[in-house]
Image (cartoon, rainbow, N blue to C red):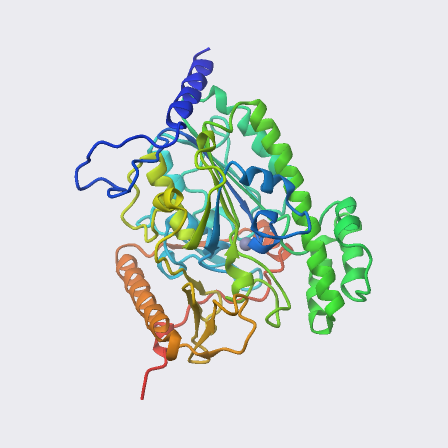
Length: 510
Ligand SMILES: [Zn+2]
């Protein structure tokens, strides 16, 4: 009975706060979010549901303009939610990007990189002086549960910190093996059904690799989105991969071993299989939300749906997500506020996944850690536009292949430490960066190039200062964790960071 009353109180809280904006009396100068033009937008004590659909490009979502009907559920949800049109990941790699989401820091600052099955016998665990979102929510009396697909989203890196089980003494669930999105939804619902009995608000983090390669989905989705084509390499391998239970990971290796032979028909078939997996995921999310609605859990909850990075199908000569172009970094960011407040708003302008943590802190009226580097987007929700944000993204996975990029409304610049170059693209005319780059430190790119350098110098200095206190620890991986990495094709990467700083390779005038 006590639980029922608590649930009723939570719903009431959601409804009161969910009326939208409340007039804010003048606050002292230390108040977060001071200076907002039209009062405070906040939902203290609301539940939080954060859904990460690994590897989902923004431009494959209907609400972002895709016309293939891959995401009817997300498109419907978007009508009562806020769409951030130009959100960018901090990294194309799962571990780095998710830890940026959890810490509001660039990968260089939090220090967590993807592991590899062959070489990554140990990973770096995020240091205690870089507090994570679940830790902060736990300290604010939230009951935190993670239902995550594992792989590079693993507990040894510190992703489990702040989470607890869905019942006393039960562990959180960072699966060490790739799980079907159906299993994610089943497990998430298993916890969601207990939320009305909790005596505190809930934070549920869910994550799925369903749209990650090898782009698996039930046959009916593949028949609809990826009917047999003239693909001579991908088609036969994919059929073996998807129709033979248990063969999945080995066939995925076979697939990428032949990528040099792929024709445009093969690229198209990969892309179609990816669409099929998105459509399947979208249908499972509908099943998830249908039950959340019957549990009366949607209106008292802040829902955030995003991805950690995009995916390439040969646009820049490669596959999967190992570069820093638009298709690798432009991700969906959809936020549904309690009661559908500001629903239907489309926020223009750039933002980054490091802005999500400070946004949630402001919405929940929790004092976030001062290590956060992002900017709260609450004001952008009110005005419909972000203001002057310029996302920086890094690829720090390879010792000798450090790369970083910075994006403004008109320019994208990219630093490649191995080549010692900074290149630029005119984003206004060439949003997909398909034209040949020009000098990223000259002409229209000059300021952006210089600002990228400033941002990186700051990031490396901040990391050095934090590391001097606590650099985090190396944590060995289990056989099961290494096998899970192999299943995701993370077999060849080096995780050793270079001596000194890759900024030593920054090109200087004269
Ligand atoms: Zn990922």
